[in-house]
Length: 131
Image (cartoon, rainbow, N blue to C red; front, side, top):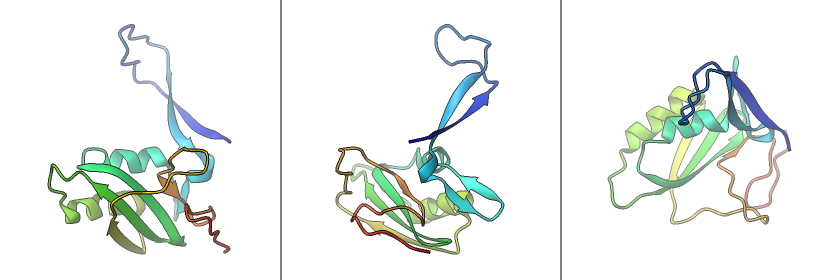
C-alpha cells in the first residue's frame, strides 16, 4: 500500500532538533477522501478530532459527500456532540453527516484498525461500494 507523506520545514521535535526537513505521514492513499477542491487525509481527520474524549472513531463515506461518523466515546468525559459535528464539518464540508455512538468498532481481518473509509473503499462489514 502507498503512504502519503509531505515534507515539513518545522524542526524535528525530538531531542536532537535537527534543522533538516521532516516527513509527515498523512495516511494511506486508499484512505484519502476527495472533496471539491481538496483532498482530506486521515491525519487531517485525526487532528480535527484529536482532543475530543473519544476512544475510537471510524469515518465512512456512504455515498459521495455523505458521511457516517461512528464514535466510541470515552465515558469518563462528556462529549459535546455539536463540537464533534463542527470539527468534522470544518475538515470535510460534508453534504450530509450522521454521528453514531457505538460500543465498539470492527478491526480488519489483519488485526489493523482503519479510521477512514472513502466512498470507493470496502467498509468494515465487507460490503463494497460501487459508484
